Length: 157
Image (cartoon, rainbow, N blue to C red; front, side, top):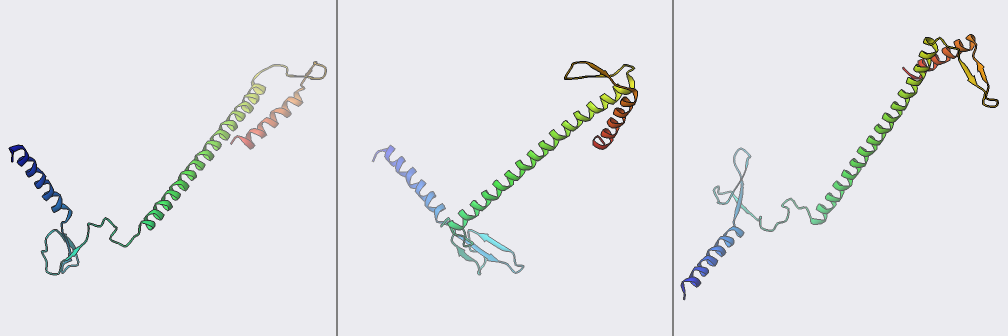
């Protein structure tokens, strides 16, 4: 045999030994006098029992269909939580938009009231049918000021 073939054979043999040793490792489980559970790769305690860990199946008796069902339930619950979160966000956004609209409305009312109180001008309205100006009397102006104040107290506090 050539030297290269012997080296390849040795590498393959060592690799198989390592793989075989790790695949068939033994695991022992025992409970000490204090009730503490121990695991080891050697049988340290005489009451230790070998457990099978090479099957890849859950050791607590859960089948694959149970695991799939749990995952489906978890996904369903996560989707529910996400939809609830989105719904709350939409409601928050709607309340915020309504509040902004209300703030703009109140600002307009307060602006009108301020202009009625501060400006010393003759107020008039346009008659849509004829296009003529109709001047507002002082009594009507006071009535509109009172109506604006009532509207502001009712809707803007």
